[in-house]
Image 1 (cartoon, rainbow, N blue to C red):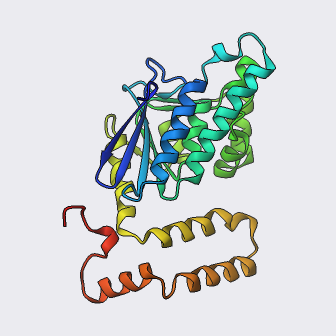
Image 2: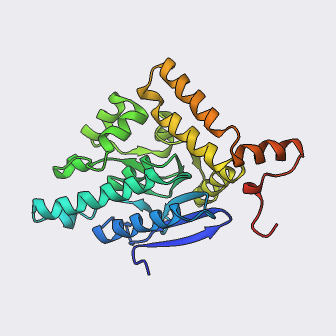
Image 3: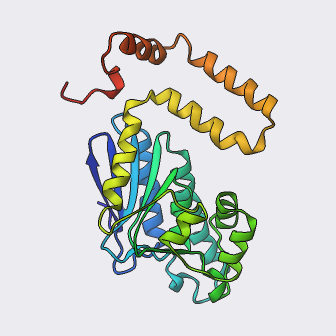
Length: 261
């Protein structure tokens, strides 16, 4: 049984709640639990999307437990960094859509976890930042890249080098998050967004997601070639045939129907 997180199901979505109160700090054991949970969900065809949030109403996650770095032990620190790498890769590798429901502070490794999700929803009053340099460290779970990719180099420098912590409204303005909602509603809105994926073809979603994520590294000609090849790969498959048949028959496709239909 997990100690540092809880897992619940709502329709075709799974909700992972980081639960290491009061600040939902990320320990090696907690990150290992997160990795194992995501890998299990990735193998469960009944789950189409994952929402990640924090326990309580003050913290999504304040990031790594700094006690793990207090002794300056490089070998011990590397164990923590590998646990972070594994957990964030498990989020990236999840075949469906992932949504971070930020309810409070999302700092350091907590924000890095949110950044690898497909969408970030944040409640009013939330604070987001990567303040590792204040304690003589830097983001080490990909934050220097994922933040720069999302908000641009200038804002990434301002946030990381200056230790600036943004409000939800500021984060929305620069494109760090996708939506601001009232307090207490982040998880609800995140689940609503995630459940929309249940109406889409699972294989098509995976193909489109790959193309979108690869697009910054491809020129237009190469991207169009890959898009065409991916489309032809879908044509004639069971999912495509069912999707078109359902549309023409004005019914829901098999993958979008409720479990008890």
